[in-house]
Structures are given as C-alpha cells and as structure tokens.
Image (cartoon, rainbow, N blue to C red; front, side, top):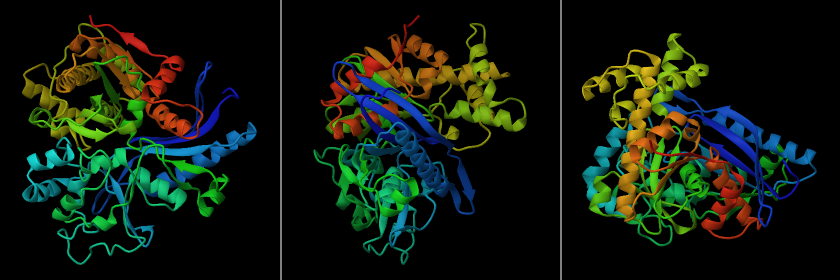
Length: 494
C-alpha cells in the first residue's frame, strides 16, 4: 500500500466466507483505491436439531480477530483507522432479549420458510404484498421467516412473543455485528428493504407498520432505520478493549446488503448497463431512480431493493455459483474431485466439443444443500438434452445454464427500465470465470465487462471514505474512481 489517503476497514461477510479488508482511499488528481485482506475465514452453516443455522459465534470471534489484525497493520504504518463498515448477505436476522442474542440465526436455506409463505399469503395475497414492498417472491424473504419464528411472531406461538423491552428486538446480520461493536441498535435501509416490511415507494425509509401488524410482527421489535453514510456509533468499551482500537472509532452504515455495496463498486458504463453481482447468488439488474412496481415486473420475478443515495436496485435473483460450488463439494466429499481442480475443470469445459444441456438454473430443487450432481442430472434429463457424464460436462452445462439465465434477466431488466441493453458488468467472484463471462456475452449479444472482483468491498469502503470526507461526489464520481484504479476485462459476443 501507499501512504497517501484515508484508511478504512471493510467487514465483508459472504454466504460461504468472510473477510476483513484494510483499504486506503483518496480522490483528487492522483486517486488511490488500494486493498489489503488482513483476515479471511470460512462461513459454513451448522445443522442443529431444529434446523440449519449460521455459526454466528464463530463469525463474531473471527470479525473481532480480523479488526485486531487491521489495527496492528495500521499501527505498524504509524496510522489510524478512520472507520469500520459492515456488509453481509440479506434476509437473515438475530433476536435479542435484554440486549443478548437468544439463538443462532437461522440460515435462509432452512426448510421452515415454506410454512411462512403459506401463512403470510393467507393474510396478504402476493399481488398486494408486491405492490407494497416490491420484492420478488423468494421463500426465504424475512417476512416469511418472521411468520414461523415463535420468538418474533404472535401467530407462531402465542406466549413467547417479544416483550418489546429496551433490549428486545431483531437485527439483520450486518446490523447485529454493528450492535456488537457499538451497542447501538439500527437497521441500514438497503438490507432492511429485503425484509418485505419496508414500503418500496416511500421516498424516505420507514417500516410498514400496518403490514407488520397484519402478519403478526410487533412494530416495537424493529430497530430505527439509518442510511448509508450515517454513523451508527463508536466502539463500545468491550469492543475497543478486544480489538485495541480507540473507542472513538466510528462504525459507519454502508450499503450493508452486500449487493448494494457491489453495485456502488460497479463501473457501469452508461445508460443501458446491467450489473451482475455474481457469487453464491447472481443478482442481475439495473440501477433505477424509482421502483418499478408493474405487473410485468412482478410476473417476471423482479425485486425492488433500496440502493445507496436513494436509488432502487431493480434486479432478479439467479441461483449463481451455488450450483457449481455444491457440485465441486459433492465430488470432493466422494473423493472424486477437489476444490483445487475447479480451474482445470473450467478449462476442460471450455472446449468446443464438450456436450452440454441448458437447464433451469433457478429450479427450486437446486436451493437446498445436498446431492447437487444428481439434481443437475435430473434437470438435464427433463430438459431433453445430454445428461452430463464427466466433470467438464457438468461444469459446461451449469455455466451455460447460468449464462443463459443472466442473459435473459439482463434483457428483462433493461426492458422493464425502458432502456435498450447496452452492456453487462459482471463483478464479484464470477468475474474470474472466463467461461461464464464469454458465454454471457455470447448469449446476450452485448459486451460483458468483467470486474472488479472486489466490487462489494469497494462499495463498502467508498461510502465510508465519502463519509470521512476523503472523497466527494455522487455515485458517478465514486464509480469514476473505480474506473481509474481497478482493472477490468472486456468480452465481446462471438
């Protein structure tokens, strides 16, 4: 790293791993945007008697340890950390009683959510729900999880309802970590909008109190809403002692939904550019000044989530690299492959004579963990194409199916936004997958710009740096800094 600019820390919690990143940012004529990953740790779900959970205690310890490491790196350079920002996956939450977490947060892939869908839709038909919250139907949206959580919902198990005391309530995952660092309960708006309890059309973020009460969620357990760039609080005495950071270190709200941060860090070329934030999930969409709540958007499965600076992320959730990664995990467990061989599999899958079948990558059978290769075989058989018989054939079928879904969703997003599709920006881990990027360009008929891989961390640190006064401007100026400092690769359609 150079010695110019402001140091901030991004805590980036993904669905399979987490990281603590020290970043240096400065604007002006010689812009700087540099990163050093000071900690990386796994994030594996754990199976308990009552279902699938996140190992939140292990994540908490890893984050604190990572912040300690970041402080040590800064001290060796004779510098201080200006702020901390936290982003994570969406929809999951922890329940507090008396200020303490009472249970491990459930994993969104836990099967209990199906019961929640039935309960909510029996009270509020999906058409009305979409008109209010603008969310694509996904069975794990928080509102459905709330419906079957006896710690939250009066209809799930009367008598266990939250007492709504001063230390009681729910916190989404990034907000839970901010609370552990500061002692302040708050909900950042980009992630809060994924709960289904924030009105899509409201200019200012607010909870839909009437909807919450109808589905049995006490409004008093929902924390105050904050916006990206707001200071949530400074470190508590406990967090300062554990990390060695000064108590005055602020924790700043960023786009705490990792996709919101990723979109900030995506160098969208022009009007008509579509983003694809590709990791475990593939989020395909456009940045819109207002939500799109039409019947076409609803029936096409598009969601309206709040973005940074008052924008809307009009996007469709695609299964992402989850299917590929689960296949690799299954082969590894069987002793027929290893994670180190994925690059070789991708190279072999790129050969023009590898047979493949395009199947529905969004089939709900692919959502839970399990024997993913068997499910892929079944879907290929149902699609009427060749059933993969080797690793490269599996990989080619999965990647082509994912690229096909990306291309279709990109075209739909552009149509809903009223702009012709001009280009697709793939960021995140999927930007490293040349086969996926080229296949997406071929199937969409427009150029694909791959990178930056670190778009989520970039968006996180840019919002912090702007809050600290190290850089200025709106999203266009922030993205200009990304374009000036981060390499990308362009794939032309063949």
